[in-house]
Length: 254
Image (cartoon, rainbow, N blue to C red):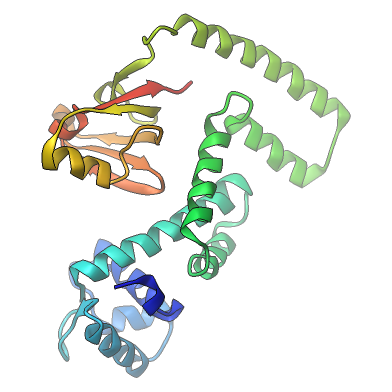
């Protein structure tokens, strides 16, 4: 089903069911009503509409679950929400509750092109040697206290020191030495995907998940023996099996 056939309210319901499915074993009508702060008859009416559209499965007095198509749409809505929320909290340093509320409003209207541009902008800020966490901390300081020539000079000197060290490190790793298997990254480390090897359905599955050359990947957790590896890429949280990780090579990001 095309997104054009969904209203913002329908998307909200799909997202709520999606999130509840991550939290509880079985989603009930009263769970949805509580999360959205609406009355039970209102929820029942919307669920009837979503059942008719083939997006959820629900019988009277039974649990609610997303269909395959409903899950795909809900996953995309949730992805938009998480990207926007992270932009507001991590980049603009907006209060988490306000950021969550604003993301919920904007997620229904933002275009795919604008969303991907936002993702690339966030990746650039986080990974460019002239950006990074320190740069964002300076932005927070600016929001709180305004511009200070003394502080600006201090930050510039510190930046030049760090920039020189990073430049030297990059030069030492030229000649292909920066490319290494994704499996070698530890939790918290990031890399830029250089290539994805392999052929057939397994190769296509990896690419379909957004694990493509040029994308920035961050390792979140590695299970014992390296299987599975949990990563974050383009706003998604993915779990890759050991045999899938073996086909992904990255360039280390400093």
